[in-house]
Length: 104
Length: 180
Image (cartoon, rainbow over the protein chains, first blue to last red):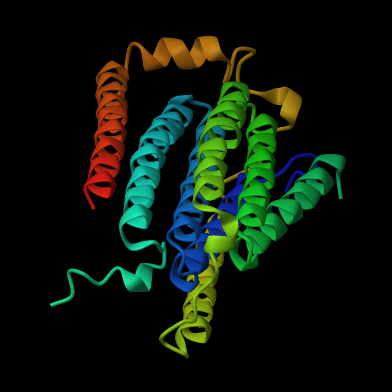
């Protein structure tokens, strides 16, 4: 193996580690804002893998898909934070365990 | 260990550490700042992968716009009003960490198998990008506006809908709190 450069597989490993940390954040934290930030971390790790694979194949398509993911993430953050603010105004908390109005 | 690999290991360690600190930090503002550091590290990796346009978009869109929005909402709600509540299920955290370790092991096995089988390879050093314009705004734009024109338009409609949705949500929230 050529030691002069970084293997693309290392980027994929890093992406997987960051994704796993993001999943832990989503499952462990109770504040809706923290869960949201962990989701952003997971989206970013997926983007890193996409860009790394684009580099592997020498094309630019993976970067464009990552760019579209970035735009969708921006839209998601705008709507999601608005929902969090609206929920906070109504029940004065962002604890996801308190959001059980739909409990059957 | 070559210089490029050493830089990758150092920045990768910073990225993983900032992600971990983001998850375990009690203060929401600290979490947001750690996440910004993590996004900066990922922008650095985009640069080492030759994706210069993506690196700049990462800084401006993620570390700039999105995280400013996060910090704005955290400040508006008030970080002192965002305490981490007690978990109603006591064994949730250990089980979550165990399952995450299992998932991470699966990721590592897949990635190492791909490396050992030679399907992902060393693409060459940083100065050895496929073409001179690889990853520049020009090359991204020409592909985006030709082959990916329909996804681009759909994404623009999604952004418009998100913008209108955000406005409508805040108007309704103000109205309902004013009526109470």
